[in-house]
Image (cartoon, rainbow, N blue to C red; front, top):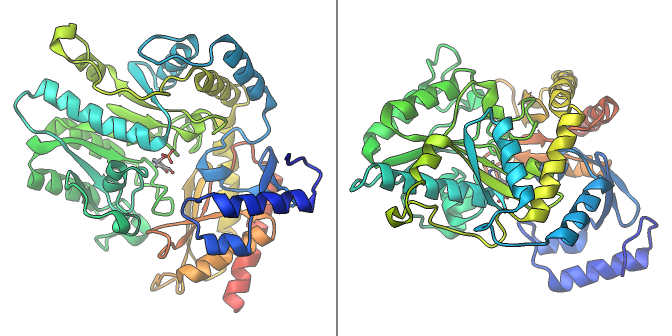
Length: 460
Ligand SMILES: Cc1ncc(COP(=O)(O)O)c(C=O)c1O
C-alpha cells in the first residue's frame, strides 16, 4: 500500500483502520483518534499534506524539530550513499560521519567540547545526568555529589530520570514516586512571577531561590544544575538577560556543573546557533537533539566541555571511561544526515533568518493585543508563546478546553499551532515553533488564523 500525493480515500481509510487496530499512540486518546485523524503523507517547506490532500501550514515544525523544513530530498541521497558505504558499526570504534559531525558541533559551540552521541533528547539529558555524576565520583572521591537542580514547569524528556528532572507535576503523576535525586526551584517565568515580583526590581529572586535550594540541599550533594535557556514547556519563557550568567556564577561558586538543555533551543531556533550563546555563558554539558538533523533521522548528543572530558581520560586501569554504551549512538547514517542538515542551516543563513522572521512574527502577533484574551506575547527567534487569559488584569487562566478550541480552530483552518504551559490540562499558551524557512506570507497567515480563532472565542 502506498500513500502518494494523489488522494485515494480508500487507501487512506485502510491506513486508518490498520492504525486503529494495531498502533498504540503517544499522549493522544484513541477515542479522539477514532473520531478524527490526520494521516500525514508528505511535506514540503513548512507545509504538510494529509493523505486526503488537505494542506496544513505546520507552525510547530512537527514536534519543535523540523528546522530546515520538509521535503529536502538531498538528505535522502546522503542517507542512501552512507548506507551503501557503511550502514552501521558500534561507536566503540570510529566512523567518518560521526567524527566530522563532532568536529562541526565543537566549532559551532566555539571550541573546547567533545561530543557523546545518543538518539533522542531524553537520552541526551539522561547521559548528561550520568556524566555529571561520574565526573563527581572522579573529582570528589568518597563524596556523594549526585543531585540535579531543575526548575518547575521545565520539560527535559520522557524517561523516568528526565521526567523527574522536569517540573511538570501533571506529566509525572502516573509514574510516581520518583527518586528524590532531582530537586526543583522556581522558574524565571516573569509573566507569572512565582514571587509576585516584577523585573528588574525583583533582583532575580528566582536565582536567589536557586542558591537557597543549593545551600539547603548541601552544595556537596549537588552534581549539576539543568536549565533550558528559553523554557519551552512553560509556554515559552524568555528569562531576563542576567538570569543565565547568574546561574552560571552560582554553579562556579559551588563547584556544580552547568547542564544546558538545547534540545529545542538549539540549531538556530532562537536566532543564534545555540540559545545559551545569547547570554555569553560557557556550559559544562549541553544536550542537543531535534534540529541537529531537523528530524530527518533520529540522532542527539551530550556535548561536554573539555574540563569534563579530561576527567574521563586516563589509563584503562583507572576506569575513567564513559561508563555506558548505546547501540545506535554515533550511527553513521544519522550523523551524515545531521552534518548535511547543519550545512544547509549555514548555507541558507537560517539562523539569521530565524531572528529576522521571528521578529516579524512577534510583531504581527503583538498587533493582536487589542484582543483582551491575549495576556502576553513573548519569544526569541522562531520560538514564540501567546499566553491567553480570561482577564488581562487578573491574569485568570483560560480553561484548557477553550485553549484546545483555539488549536482545533486553527487546524480546521489549515494551520497547526501548539499549546503548552503547566501541563495538558492547565495549558495556557499557544506555542509557535515553525520551520526556520517559514516565509513572511506564511507568518501573516498564522497571525490571521490565530486572530480569527481568538476573536471567535472572545465573542462567544
Ligand atoms: C527541552 C526538551 N528537552 C528534552 C526533550 C526530550 O526529547 P525527546 O523527545 O527527543 O526524547 C524535549 C522534547 O520535546 C524537550 O522539549
